[in-house]
Image (cartoon, rainbow, N blue to C red; front, side, top):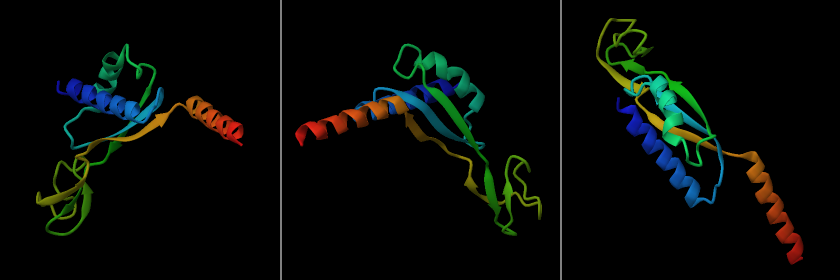
Length: 132
């Protein structure tokens, strides 16, 4: 199960980003996982909690978007879902295709806790008033 290494790397990437940008609390992490990426979303969900346990990401919600595996047929230019049609073009039956999407695994968004943002904005406003 290679997903544990992927989840650990994702958590490290988010942690490094948060540290570099002075973020103390992440509310949500949004991932895009392609149908053709060889990463099983259910395993990522299962492994996330144990991997981030005891870290500042422990209470973070994980949201996973599944990106359809789409391709264009090299013979008839039909666009189709590779998984639904088992790799064959539903229009002409050809197996020759160019994959357009669905191979990705990426961190789409990192949502910062809104309460933290509000506190930072309040502190910044207070500093501006004291300087005036």
